[in-house]
Length: 492
Image 1 (cartoon, rainbow, N blue to C red):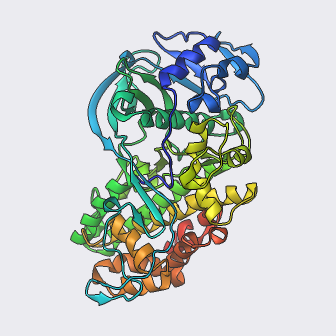
Image 2 (image 1 turned 120 degrees about the vertical axis):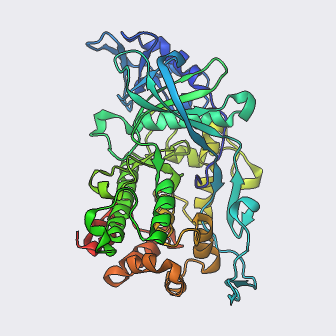
Image 3 (image 1 turned 45 degrees about the vertical axis):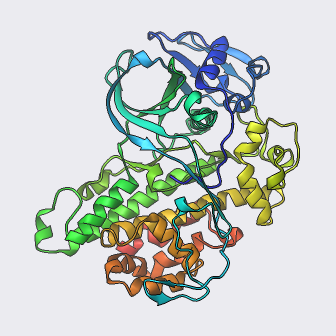
């Protein structure tokens, strides 16, 4: 996963937050669990402020029918997040681990000579290095984080949801990863609180649902998600690439596939379209709630199925919100507004930001984003918010390119880093030139044909989303309305 321009910072643990919240919420009826409303959290608490936030966050306390205290105050959300105990769960199996790489927005690299695949590229020559092997590619900053999270499949072992399947996400303890893991866990928790606020309307079906979290005796932070699927868009892309190479479907065949070889490919195009549409619906929901994803990629989209015959039941959901940034302009959880974050951003001589008395943890969270915004000329509040949204759109463009090319090309002929390098470094976002290059490679025929449909609708959308000028990129609602994602090019 490649969080866009994210910065790691210090924060209190989930245990600290839970302990502080205890002052304002009573015990739930089920054993060893405590229901904590979002009103128990403040923006400052989620990002490492001292527990004194409890003293000024409280407003009017109202007693609910379940006899659990709920705090109400202006700007506070009413989502319910449960604080569990490790004894509440039975772990079934280990699903895998995740690392994190911080990558800033694109800035064109300096010209250099060279060749690629035997073709002379002149000033458009690539650097010839992978993102993990370098600290800078042109103006693109790359840095590998130290946090490795672990994912487990499990189920609730007691309480009213006993037997419910869940996904458990474990952040390492501070002794092994420093403070980075604590702030990522707290930020992900705080983001889900906002996104699961029922007072603002219906909750999106395209965002992973968080039940709550707990802290172990060793200091690990665990988040508990509803089991909405165990595979990601990246997993599907790998399976689809192998299926494309072998001329078959992903999952079960349809009877008529053996008589018409175009049927599996057509279903694959439908699957990819619905996958992308679901991911962008989730992103649109986040933007409507004043949150940026800042970590959008194929590994951050979870799927409930990879069978292309089940495309009607496909439900993509965004996950991995540890680097999400608030651009609402409102202190929804009691913290600073976007304007305050900009005007009082933390001291860092290397980044050119000013000294400030603001909590450095809050400032560092968005420091990279605001630095890039300043470099792009976004210096007022509205422009900075527009830049942040456009930053997510750029990541969405890379996701679109990945989900078209990797599944529809011959297995092993293209991957995510190579595709991004081709777009950014080799052709410097010259999409017509990219199209000509792709059309010349027989291994990429199906992907090129898909992008060419309806007078090159796919290329037009990709060019708009990857526009070097952030002000010219479309909103996510405009992306969803584009004919390439409405199904019009497939006559659906």
